[in-house]
Length: 92
Image (cartoon, rainbow, N blue to C red):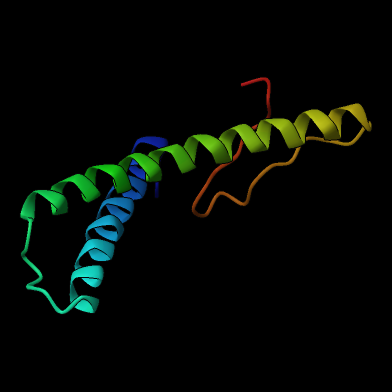
């Protein structure tokens, strides 16, 4: 099962590979060698990993905001299914 640390690592790796893939795709579309400017592969990997981690934090903040709105309306907090992302009540 995925824990919060594993989920962050997974998001970082997916974001990193996506960033590198985007750079290689743009090189392929421009018909230049894929390994041209290899330092950009590293740069795009780092930016993609940062974006992946930022997405996890943004999703958690969104859940807290939704739970706050639901509490104002007298509804119970939103609780996830526990498969990929396990949400918890705002008090934890």
